[in-house]
Length: 609
Image (cartoon, rainbow, N blue to C red; front, side, top):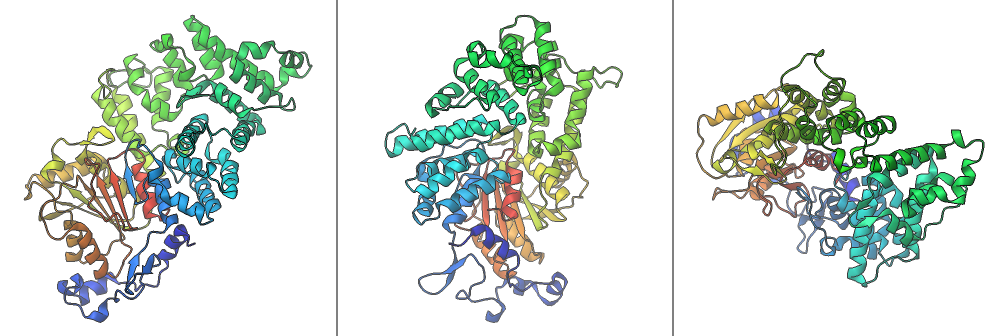
């Protein structure tokens, strides 16, 4: 069976003629570039294979084939076998993944698992649900080799309890659909038990388990207590810390502390310096935090044991001093999400303050938000910052259930952090054309699916800025019904500058209230430009313009003899249509927008799926 990832890599070294741009502009006139009057020998016949992805059809012509493995890779990365990414959470069903069952039937089940591990461990699957869903299908397979490989890969793919519980949720759904059983057979029980035992490998992982069973106590209807009981997990006394944690998870800390097992260990001379005592002290602190009514004790426990928000009882979550303590060790994503709450409790000054006037915690938060090393280490997506900036400046959440005063220092730090986060997106080294639809339906106040606090034109300006900053070659245009205008943007332009340039061009109205999404391809051919990637930001509210965008793309590919020009269509305000050909392996459709989209686009262009 062909490996679609290898094919994509082979495509980079294909034996296609390399066109010299200067010679092209000098030797070709516009008509020849369009290919309308070119000699037949200028282009390859349709009965000649010009791409590794092509296969012969019934009458001898070569067409593009999307292999089963290619669809699998697309599904892992986008949740769709046809390169159709949808922002937000989408419900997955067995009808969405027939290619997985076909691959298993063909004897390629182990290869499916290998790909799952590859995408997971290399962080190429940004959304976890599609990956966990396919893993559950493999674990529920009747093919013994596939099942064994899938269960062996469980610790590598499910790295935190939330992922394990989601996997169990999918397993339950598949078992109900296939046989109506609960699905807790011997292999399943053994694998779940091994997942918990894998935490006993190092002292660091044991501490993580202690934090995880208290922080992620329940997800998707599953509790650690129920999962451990169903798995019949038995831990011997060779790993006393793991055994203690399992007893705590199932029967509670009070019962665990009263067992002869733990009391005998506490009598040993080395107990006070053991890792077990550290875990007992941590869980004691978490238990005390759950039961205390003393705010000063709550603050002390947070600072001494680095407790997180999930360990704090609701009665303390409106206390300013508690949040001051939480802010000291709060992870970046949690910090960004809770800026509104902390501002409401007046952790930050409402006016621009000097270093002298700032509290330690305010200074720490302001510095963390723009710390390049932290941003890169935690792989914060630029769009996460973009959303945070727009939401924070509004002074209220989307449901308007929380309002807060806006701190200028926080806004400044968020904006600085945004540009550092651009480094987390891999450059592709490709030649880009970014085309922004500025028809009436896009430029009016149209909210983005998946990011309702943003307008479509704001997202387009953000992505154009990102592309210009990380890619060496990027042209930009705006287009409407039958007209295009070039955007002159510089690599150091900020988002507000790019937005301003778009606004300046809009000062001279362009014709049409709808859009003709074939205009970017017409522009590329008229300017005799060769691009590797064309990205269109639109709402797909297309007009009666000629030709259809998919036909225009085909003509452009033929004109430059480059059949693998990639098209990315971002339908910012539309979730159920696409102007791209869903059968084209070099077309990605994005419906809506969220923090995963920039990296999803980058992975697609780099040939990861």
